[in-house]
Length: 258
Image (cartoon, rainbow, N blue to C red; front, top):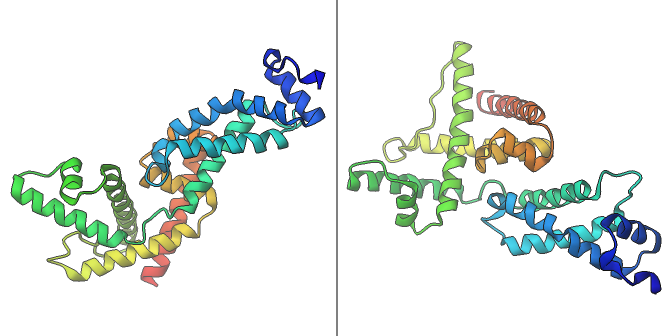
């Protein structure tokens, strides 16, 4: 046990080598404490992605567990620096948590209608378009949830517009589903069908494509931020995004216009 004396004075690399050799619990605990700052940093950086359904403290606790498991599996001869190795594992852990939470709520249609109704009512009352804060306050809804639902709506509209543009270029035309469900009830059904079909299409994408679509359209991250979250280059994110959009448009066009 004499070799465990003076753990505090040893470098991280020395402790990693000690644990790789002897597998002592005390060494793993010391390493976990030293690298906990990485879990905290990643939890802060990715906070907007999980804030709707998980507390930062819980993410940090999960990160600590990921560090302990990472220490077990780390091979200094095969893997990158431990800091890089464990940062990727923690990011992956958070992405897994996000993936397990539906990217589009099951009651999306009802919530979207509530937001649009509130927007109309407040516009009439205020004589101007309401702010997100005013809409959320009117519905007694968390502002982040309200904004997230509106970004989902934007995603549906963007893809619908792309579909319309492509069809018009081919000499065909189609009506974009309207938000005015009171005046055009048939388009409310069309919109729900578009969302349902889009959800099916997204679920058929590869995992990384699904994450890029969700982070870009739902979480409102830009390409640079997504590259940082997924730890790949920005050009690669652009490629993944383009590939995913092509697949989504093909799926939706085939389904809706077959």
